[in-house]
Length: 413
Image (cartoon, rainbow, N blue to C red; front, side):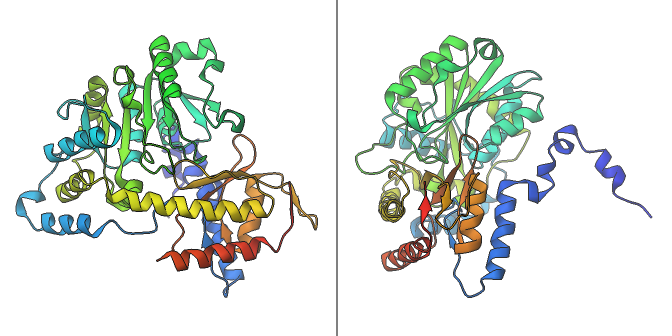
């Protein structure tokens, strides 16, 4: 009888060495799913409160969905889109000017559509990374650019995002020898998982740093318009000289509640965009044209995101109030839908937490509250305010239920 043993022996090293790709237990989110399932089975009468999932809780605006419906019925939209339609590129250029004040983008040479930020981050290393090259990435961060850097024989060097520096990296601490082999510098603000936002001074430093060491900056701006209170949306490309050193990725997943639609755009340096387009041309045939048409409509109506940002701002305020009343030290973030907080040391009755994963599993098993642990730079958990709630009344009910469950424990910090 034929076995699968020879199949396993034929895996590329990038797969066989990364067992977590095939072993769900070894992957953070796989573990969360498994423990979540176990906790729900153990507590069948208790509602799961999911503060771990990083996806919008609502559908895209009806006006966007209507454009998709209309365009999907047109026979001319059934063909391959390849590297995107002009309508979307023009809408992206207008969006960058109207929302961020970036007025010098050429839609023909400096913008291309992407099938979500994840696919763009996966493709970019193919254009730049040879064996031995280095990608610089913050810790913690979204890992896809680093994963594909390693696939091409490159190396990932991490630098910490520390609370004392407002979760902005100190790039000057990076070793000069490392910088000689570095090609890509990944940044993400507003940040996942910390919720931190960048400012112009920081981005100006990044531009100078990139020029000094001849780096390509990849700024993942997936949460760029989800900012609160007096914070204004900020694009890396609004900084003088930024277009000379890098690109920015914009996604409609979070800003327009279009997660599963898989659409966004890359903008910035024309040579980088051209190189990306070549890789993309050999990787996919473009996103479905009606989705691009709907995305163009969305980008031409940036006001759609305002209500979403206000909702997340309101939920952040409520959740931080609850957590702080029980000993946590949480500050409302200025952007994204994530809260990031240090874990307690123990409970008053003696349950100790040495890692964020231990604390996250405790919340899930004991209180059926799902979070995401981050032990990369100290033990923190990430909580998302994208929990399912149809209106403010339902939102308040869930917040009160979180308060009721957390109040069962006395946490020692």
